[in-house]
Length: 483
Image (cartoon, rainbow, N blue to C red; front, side):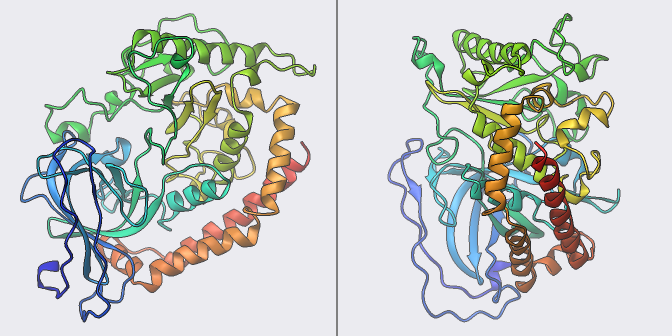
């Protein structure tokens, strides 16, 4: 559709070499006078056009494409990319797919690039809200659950994925509002930990950095040769844990030592008791046996200390293993967002060399807030196991155990009260929602999106989110005030 819209064409920097990650793509300056009369001429929301040149997008591997970014219908940036579908449950449920993209040079090598002022990197994601009109499925009618939570966590002083609202067109089809986001990975501007090489096995270097994740197992490279149709119903792949990609907690969700063998068939009758940790960095194919042994032992020692510490005394040993402040902030962000996937799925943690285990960044908030009704409005998400029976993914014992510790609760109380006097003031939260919603509406993006994906009462949805935030924070005030 952009071919017939007048615009001034910008050039991008020439790629210096074909070596991997050796250059970047940067837009030139925009002209000061341009005439545009198309439907997006008055929209400040970037419009992304992706053209795969008639090649079908697959779940794996990425296929080559060209990505062009327009602002007010003026081309501002262009890049060669590789694109694939991403997501597991969302991929199966939603007609509005999410995508992973890499920035490529002309030879197909990964290169770093900056978009929307974000730090240069090669890996990005385009996330759409889950919607399937035929099934009556729609997650997040406000289209801001992800963005709001990530912005809030960043205001708390933690790293979270930088994100930008865009509208997306792929191969001539308008797909609505998406979030253009940073993929979570090791990088000095993302999860900032030292690179861990296979040769890093001495006592100091083997201590980091690591990224672990509690999550489903879908999204790996084990099914590269399967047709796309396979991924539409591959539920077993969500729970296919193996010693190559993961390790299991020594304790079940009820704090008992696990006495049955790990890595059983997907959805076996005792799976709900297990917690698995996926190797996110180094990747499963790169991490060495010695590094696996180190990080497994570290997590196991932390869990044992957490269970064995006497909370009636003034001595704690579990804090020798974890950065307590990061656990406090992770608790607060998941609870304020009522993230019912939190703690048990899409849960990241990382360990820098010579430092303690930290929780975060936050990720995947699309069934939280006022729609997170698996847990009652007036209870903690960490009590998920009290309300959901034998889900394949339950809350690890860590969090209910931490809430038995007066030291942890005191740290939560001090942090919460400080945040409520600053970044988490009710008026600040409500203004954030109004500002996001106003921008999407004023630029016409909400109307265009729901013309494509079925109408909703957007004003009502936004008000429901604001009412939720007011009520939830007031409830948390009362509960935490008694800590």
